[in-house]
Amino acid sequence: DTGVSQDPRHKITKRGQNVTFRCDPISEHNRLYWYRQTLGQGPEFLTYFQNEAQLEKSRLLSDRFSAERPKGSFSTLEIQRTEQGDSAMYLCASSISGGLREKLFFGSGTQLSVL
Amino acid sequence: AQSVTQLGSHVSVSEGALVLLRCNYSSSVPPYLFWYVQYPNQGLQLLLKYTTGATLVKGINGFEAEFKKSETSFHLTKPSAHMSDAAEYFCAVSSDTGNQFYFGTGTSLTVIP
Figure 1: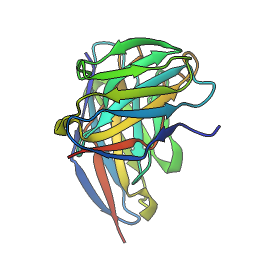
Figure 2: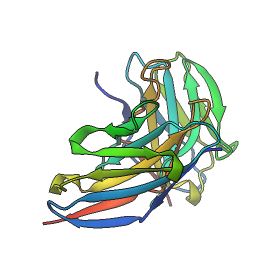
Figure 3: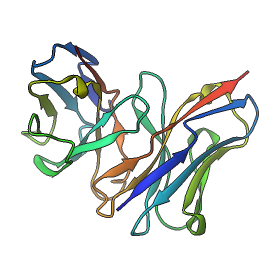
């Protein structure tokens, strides 16, 4: 169990640029979640995958955001035409459906700063 | 709909004193409740969870929480604070489908030597 890993840890970009983040969940976990956390707030749900299927998306996920999990393993979160309001910590979490499904294992996050 | 409210964004206690972090929930269905801890530059880590059964739940690092339906509360306690407990603590409730988790705004715990 190597834990959930996220890459990069930090990303600084200029407004209008596209950015992509990667998340590698724990290998046997079939559920993968993306959350966004801003300063002074708790994590906010963005989207969730079960295997390769994206089953739920938050209203926070505007059309500039897209997430994929093509083979049911790693996932990517892309933000197009970034805005300053996108600056936040983007957290990935994984879990197993059924059994201990309620327990989320979080990565350390990707801190995005949009200048 | 499910939500949690954490009272007090900052709590300071002396080393060895009781830790009490408050969480109240709102849920249209029997809730699954959680406490997570976040240390600086790290991801969130599960402290404990309540699903069904015993209302007093014990977690890691000496923390425990009691589910009180009549008060819609799930407060986190620890009898004696340690310096290593300084962190951000988040209360969370899962959605009725179990597919989403709703987090509170967090409580930052400072332990004074």
